[in-house]
Image (cartoon, rainbow, N blue to C red; front, side):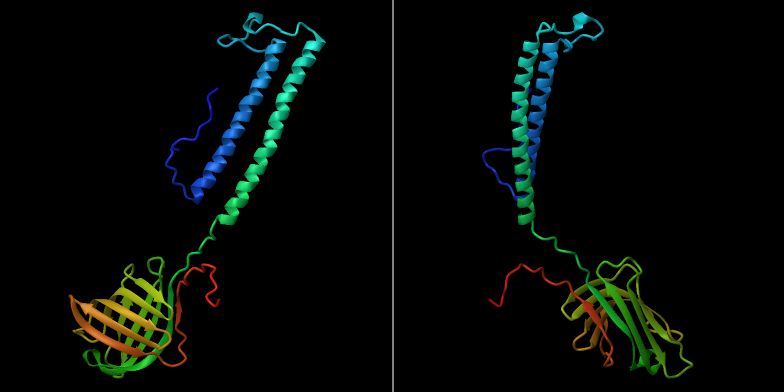
Length: 268
């Protein structure tokens, strides 16, 4: 029987908390394995004394395939071998209690020194639908602008929503709409401000609408100031830079990921 060993351990030990806990558990497992070998050896000792231990390399079909009986049908000899085995098993039993205590200490150590799991949170933005007057000469002059946006950090493709509709006062002029290009939205939140990076597709409007097409747009939504700044680029050039003042009472929600609590009391 070989000696238990823990591989990859050298004099230059550099272990973190998790590795220390794993090694302590491994040491308990190796000691349990040693006790298992010990108990098995005692069982073979009893078989050897009784003549029921099979000789290695035999098929066990004949009497000659087993070691001879050593107690010669003597009750005293049988009791002696039984006492000898009991002493060893008592030692194994005491060792089991020690290992149980060691395991409980390791579990307590792991629970006490394991840092709390920081739950992941998602940056989210929700701008309810609102309508404001607007003037866009290229697509109808005066009219109303309707705006709705939902964005989140880990949204599945298509879950992000942008619905911007410009409806000219002149009913003869078709409306122009803008929507997110699916799968292009990126979001960053900080306190009451959210920055949305996305590709936006503009469609509809009058015949020959010059603003139809795809843009790279950066939206900066400030829930505290109730403003939305939209900076758009097309073909590598700046296409527009507009700031929309959100009507009072529009409940813009920016969900930021808070910094983890390190347990320090900054108030002394």
